[in-house]
Image (cartoon, rainbow, N blue to C red):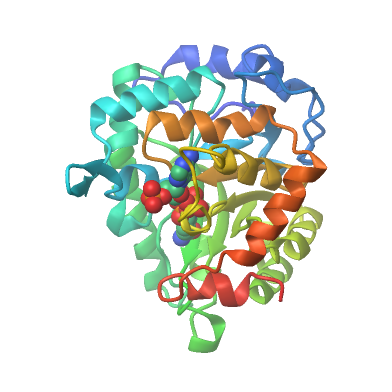
Length: 353
Ligand SMILES: NC(=O)c1ccc[n+]([C@@H]2O[C@H](COP(=O)([O-])OP(=O)(O)OC[C@H]3O[C@@H](n4cnc5c(N)ncnc54)[C@H](OP(=O)(O)O)[C@@H]3O)[C@@H](O)[C@H]2O)c1
């Protein structure tokens, strides 16, 4: 099977084969240059073209993925202003946002934590008839307890995700852990989960695998050493303020893993109290452009809730930062503390001090 060809949907859409074959040749990706990227290097060779999100190769999956992807929280969190309240993105809004993203070449769709996973992106792709263009990444919550029951947990979450996305195969399944679920607390042994992943692959329910977590960075090194050969990619936070990933990503690459980064805005904290309607309107774009400058990054996932945010964020793909932009981002990164509480792990574990 061609590695540029994610799973077929229920309809066995043959357009998908054609589309992805084109992607591999850099035709559908156009200026995204997917056909000319170095294998697993993450470096985009072609010059950026306005309106086209470039592609990179996702580690040893060989998949050609847009260097910016839709975060799963986009559809799950109530963040769209609605009178005095906030609501989720509606299906009609999602259809509009996703169609515009696909038109720009964006093909990577992440999922949310299991409890918050949404049926919206799967339904939107179905209504658009464009599932065949998407690389779908699901994250079953998993505690790596090192007991046989781990397998059942992975199976259960995978089946749930297949139903919610209305597909029969997930392109990329990432095991994920929470910060309080660490080796110190006894949760770490991935062996039974790896067995489950192998079975799911044999059943044709998933194609590629990875892991990501809120662990402290040091545990990623342990994971690379012990488990990398079983996986295709990994996922970690990276943004202008939380830059420890710069020391972790080369080890991931050395282990042959693709790198998916999350939280380019530290869950929106880096954008809070900024003049986003005025002088600082392009900050979100520039923060993602900063992430993409790192050639170890294969995909940067961002949460977004409106078509305006989507256009702004994805325009990072054809944005080159100037030295002045870098100075501004550096100052901002030092000045903008992320509130503790839910994101203490990010501030404590992933920031150079
Ligand atoms: N367990 C895991 O492995 C895990 C954990 C976390 C994240 N992830 C993945 O990583 C993705 C990205 O992380 P994230 O969503 O937590 O954080 P993020 O991308 O750093 O931040 C998203 C937030 O930034 C704000 N935002 C985005 N674009 C904007 C724009 N153009 N203008 C103004 N504000 C903008 C929005 O904040 P408001 O909501 O305040 O408007 C949005 O909710 C997730 O969606 C998910 O797919 C995975």
